[in-house]
Amino acid sequence: MTTYCSRRKFLGAVGATAGLALARPFSLRADSAPVGRVAVGMCHEYGPGVLPAMATMFDQLGGIDKLVRGKTVAVKVNMTGVSYDRLNYFRQGDTYWVHPNVVAATVRLLAKAGAARVRLLEAPMNSAEPLEEFMLAAGWDPRDFENLGTRVEFENTNFLGYGKYVRFRVPGQALMYPGYDLNHSYEDCDVFVSLAKLKEHFTAGITLSMKNCFGITPCTIYGDASDVDEPSLIPKGGRGPFHNGNREPSKSAPQMINPNGPKEGGYRVPRIVADLVAARPIHLAIIDGIQTISGGEGPWIPNCKVRKPGLLVAGTNGVNTDAVCMALMGFDPMADRGTAPFETSDNTLAFAEGLGVGSRDLKRIEVVGTPIEKGRFDFRKA
Image 1 (tube, helix red, strand yellow):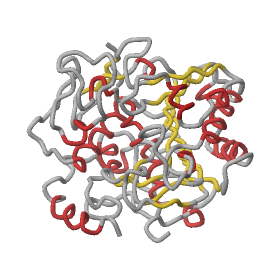
Image 2: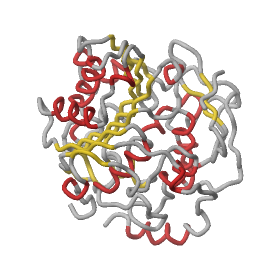
Image 3: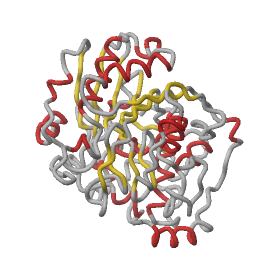
Image 4: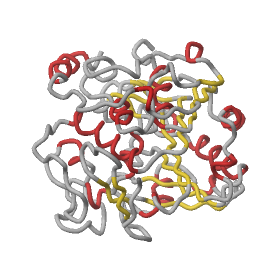
């Protein structure tokens, strides 16, 4: 295998108490973590304005030609949950999924920049059907992403698929698992793009480009009912073991570093996400914040509400990009557990910074395009 290098107030009180026992175990100096440029754009509705807004952001980043020309680009889209979940009859892309207009604009701009092939990837929960079928069931037409200037492929990465599992080891001091076994598509690419939604998350506080990578793990290995020894042939259940630590992944994969560690999701999920983005780095982070939800990551979370921040964000470092997104949402990327949005969770950005993935210090990050102060949309006051 290959190695790479008002809902939360009560919970917040509990989380603040628990935070003393769950403080991050290490840190690097903030000024030693990598920094990259982050572009912020305003776009108030889906439609023809998405493409020029994203093109401007890519130009502000210095262009993406050198990054993608002649290369295979894997794009992990955020289509969390199941194909029929909706919030108040809104389409998923208007609420908690990345919108298909943003997906299409991304493919078109990658093609324009010279990408030889684009692979759209997602691991739909408890599903082994082709990704195209999952999209069709949700009302998307996969053909909308074809004939945009380059070869486009689709893969459901929730199981083995058409290749072999690849082991991605965490460089340095891994936090939860020393490595993760993933679908081959996360290796069979030259460039990895995380295409995510601007959202809060009930367990992890926020879900942006890095938390989107939680979904790259196959439920055949990390699912609630995956086989004990070898990966299941089909996905079984969701990623409950990642949240509650009630069982190990299949024995074929690396096991927990500390099986007796805390079992609650606010401890485990941020560490797993940091591990994953250290092992499978993000080369380009794109965040759809044109229209989204507040209060959680999907309609299964009570009291979620539709919001219209009118934002698009892109950056070449996932930690930097997520830090800027947090500021745009009205949060402090330097916040610790017990402070919004991390009332019941540790700060994923802190762990990723500690692993050397990138800096969350806004003083060090160059923001181009729309200033944070002008684009800010306070999720808790909206």
